[in-house]
Image 1 (cartoon, helix red, strand yellow):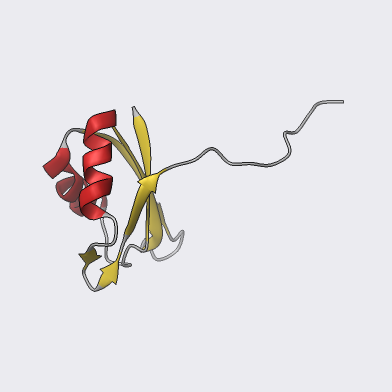
Image 2 (cartoon, helix red, strand yellow; image 1 turned 45 degrees about the vertical axis):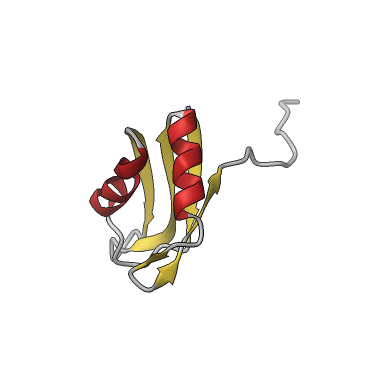
Length: 88
């Protein structure tokens, strides 16, 4: 399983439209679309879980593609770097 990071999404993006877009490349296991708390509009990014070979095909085909007037960036999500919080 690979988690994809999708950035540059238009405000009008919905979970359904993202599922339809990525389903061309395989089964979408889950989608987490960041939404504005008050308006409910897309905040421009999402995380999508797909199987490895399907995720790589989606990255190759969709990275840089235009979606409703916005160029989207699709890549493999990387773990965050930073200080781990150690209990004292």
